Image (cartoon, rainbow, N blue to C red; front, side, top):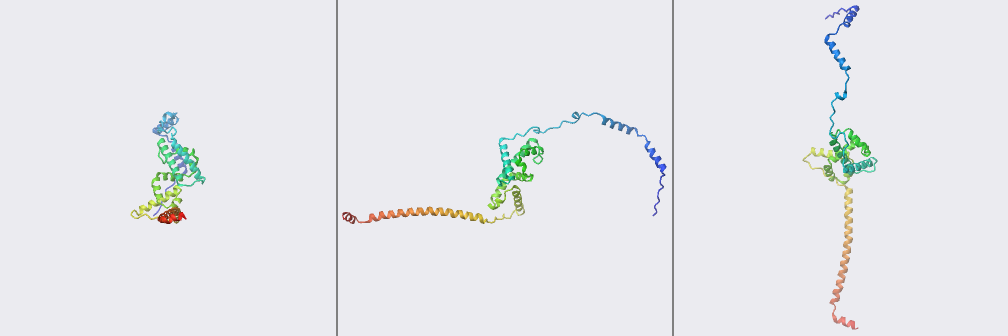
Length: 257
């Protein structure tokens, strides 16, 4: 197969062709379009009249009216969060109260501003800025605390069935969330299987036995006192009975002597 090269246009002809293209006159339609674009660009605009008024949501322009109980709850949760951040407090009930305060604040802010719980935006940021204790803890911890309060009934019932040593380890809401999800996955995987029995806690068993020993010792001491009192009563009754059984003559002779 042969390739034939097309003859090239001479330079002078190319220059002439470009000159002819530059001298072409635009069509009337193109000129009309250009005039319309120029007039539109040069025309003054009144943005206040051109832009439609933005529709405001109900309550978006005013502060949220939290109740006294809610404000008291927020202050208490803020103090507990500050203590947890400073590692001065560590218990499950504190995290539960923090989750309750966060969930209540989110619900009221969402209802006031007409937004969803997951997209509160600036109102949520402003609310957190006013409470440095809650602001200090991480977003993941706040999310886990909200989850803990949303499922607190099931979680507390599940925790009550656990050994005391295990409950002492489940303090942080994220730890409770992971353990709860693991428990739910296990139930879903084997719905007909019996839940595994918790292993006996030797420390709790020893503590319970010590309490039983103390109770038995106190009861033993009380019973010993009762036995001693009964023995004294028996001795007195025996003495009275022996005196009553002695003959009267011997008694008179003894008195005469």
